[in-house]
Length: 197
Image (cartoon, rainbow, N blue to C red):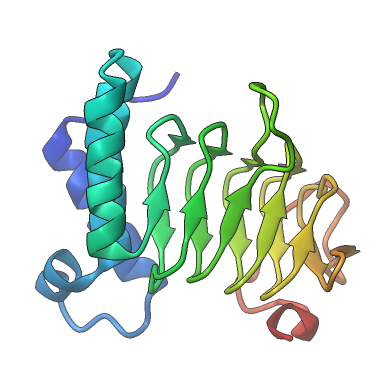
């Protein structure tokens, strides 16, 4: 069962996630005051709460204000888990029916977008512990499995298994050497060099 956190504990958890994932952090104060990805997720929590309570117009207006200030566009209908971190932030777009698990990290200029005009599930589902590199596009109702890595500028239009990496256009799924099928890699430094291409 998922533990429900108070707002102070949730803010602290978000700051801890940023500190843990960004080697450039000099202080927690710097993170709180100067990280637009963090500001975007905090604002998302506000407009998402309004969205699920049926306050759709105020939710959209707040999300657009956050977009103007942070450069990150998160639709209020998206579902985002705990300890989500957006590094750099600028140019990130997360669509209405996107679902993002816990401990996910994405870099700037990432799109979690749709490929359909129908009013249905049209955006990606991102599993726990996924890393999505700068400029990547994950399009349509695809599932990116837990612990997967999406390389910079990859275009993903098919499901990605747990623990795999995707590189290229169109995205080609690869499994990291030494990683059992369905498992996330143990070492965060053990990434395929192609993920950075």
